[in-house]
Length: 95
Length: 91
Image 1 (cartoon, each protein chain N blue to C red):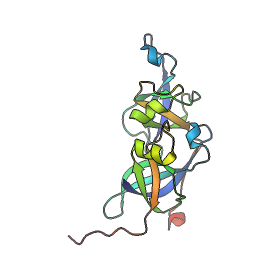
Image 2 (image 1 turned 120 degrees about the vertical axis):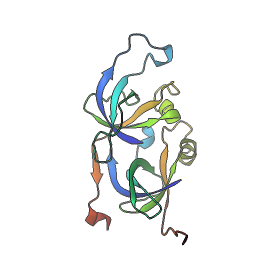
Image 3 (image 1 turned 135 degrees about the vertical axis):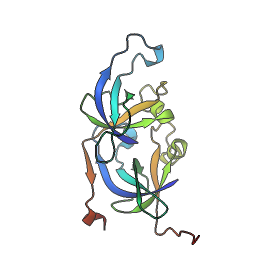
């Protein structure tokens, strides 16, 4: 699982039937410090509660298909949870 | 499986039910000298790992689902071991 930030919503005009009930969000992947890292991608929202600005964590491939309810929808990236806080241990805490 | 070090954790209130009651750990990947490579991943805790520990992370979905005993868990990375020592061959 990796971090990402929702940067927009995607509203398709025409969509395969299997995806018709799936919210689609545009997500910018983040590095561990919360900086953008890599190209944006479209994620299905398994939580159905994410929106623009929200930091989330997401999965790819088969795991993405499992993240939705009903499960096994044909998607390649999906949001599994919303992030309240990422806590990084200080150097002192790690030693 | 990969070696990582737990350098943080992720707090999440709204999530898939499989995450309920489980810790989400932020792990940095380590190279052969034990230094961070810069890559990271968020892994579920399957063993009670914590702050600063070097861990063994299973980064594969069907193995993770087997450990969680749930064929529909949308999880790929799970901490499966705590590492005491890694011995690097002399050559």
